[in-house]
Image (cartoon, rainbow, N blue to C red; front, side, top):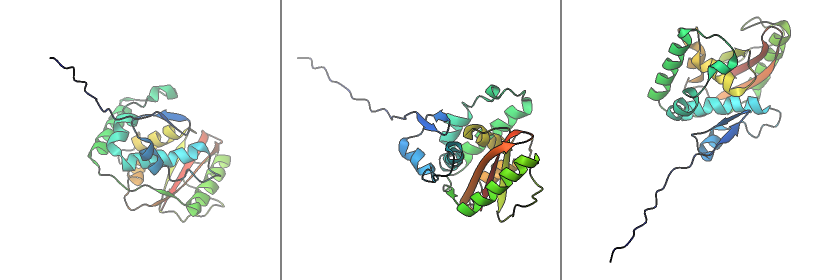
Length: 201
């Protein structure tokens, strides 16, 4: 007698999860939860929390982030005319992510947040970029400033691709293993519409 034998195929399930204003796939819920170290901070906006989550996903699961976020990211939707150097910078990011080891997640820090918030608001009102604090103190170890975007994935991709920076300074800051703390603030900007200040320690 012939018997029909049924085979059960177990396929990993990766749900679609909303992080900030973006839906991402390729990560399990537990992976997203482990990266969302600022999810309980009530005074952060959804995208400020998501900036931290995206950075942590890239740090903790670099190969997955390269495959499911960086490669799939469509910069054309931003409406800018990126030159061929952008593609090269993006390719070096993918290479970096595929070669690097996992890092520990960044934790939200209220002192770093206060520093980032002060400069985001001050620079935004004055229309300044990068440097030139007037009333804001320092105290961070490194700082990244994004301009032109208020959505988490666009902010983090701007920093990680690091277009037109041959030294990839912002990318290197985000992937510095001894940084443990971060503060993030998104604010309006007089010149570039939006700024996001990210302070690390």
